[in-house]
Image (cartoon, rainbow, N blue to C red; front, top):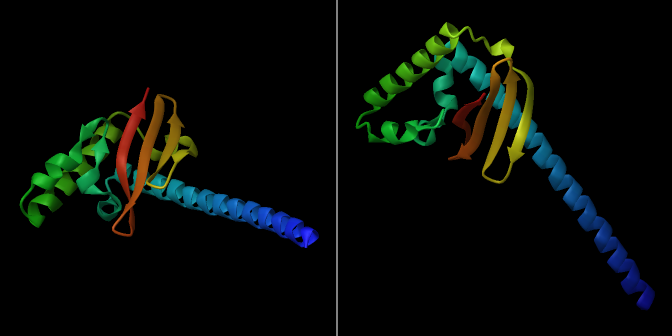
Length: 150
């Protein structure tokens, strides 16, 4: 009986270790998917593509230290919200391109942080590091934060 209990304890430890490894692998895969999503969304935003509208969590968006979501949620109509989205994307792309920026200047794409709520993605350019926050809300993955560190 004693040997059976020792064997069961060892087996339990092995199973739990494998579960932890499996959970870590799932988190790693999810993080890489978030990184790819962040990169693709940033590239679309920098080019001013309207396809990016649905990839951004407008109500929660923080961009370069500004709470864009607060202003967005105050808009009373869907038409005004769509106009806001169009203006934001157009202005972002225009300013980015005017500054000489191109999406391919950013390299070393990586996950800089990951937890149950969000994934932080970063990429480097000659002038600094962009940070992008990817969150999931209502079962949909979206960008909820953009930052730049010089």
